[in-house]
Image (cartoon, rainbow, N blue to C red):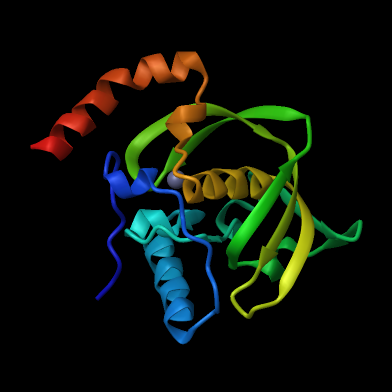
Length: 185
Ligand SMILES: [Zn+2]
């Protein structure tokens, strides 16, 4: 059965993900199904919490936006072809932020039709396992850096509404209240 993406304020979205141990066949098929669900929903990132599984695993694929919102990725200071790294499954990722921030209007598959301006680091260092078990370290910038920060926040139970600037948060307050009411009903 295809995975269902849960909407805010489902409490699983607030759960910190358990670290992933061994990469099993079950985990690989979960990652495949998450990629399919993300693509179907026309997203560029999805965290395990969003399919009801609070573990340290998320998927990203920035290829649909590669022209409008460029991304870059370097390993040991050498530029890599971003598309060749997509889609990417991050297992137990650890992210370090560089100081520079920019603003962009983000969406989230758990908040249908809702967008708000979120400041994020323009560059990040990522240390993660991939779904084939390899440990990798890379630096990411542009859209890829933003998406990874958004997804890694999900793995900690943190949502983009927590990081929105105050103008966006005020503008969305009514919609969020409605979502909370609909969920309770
Ligand atoms: Zn999200």
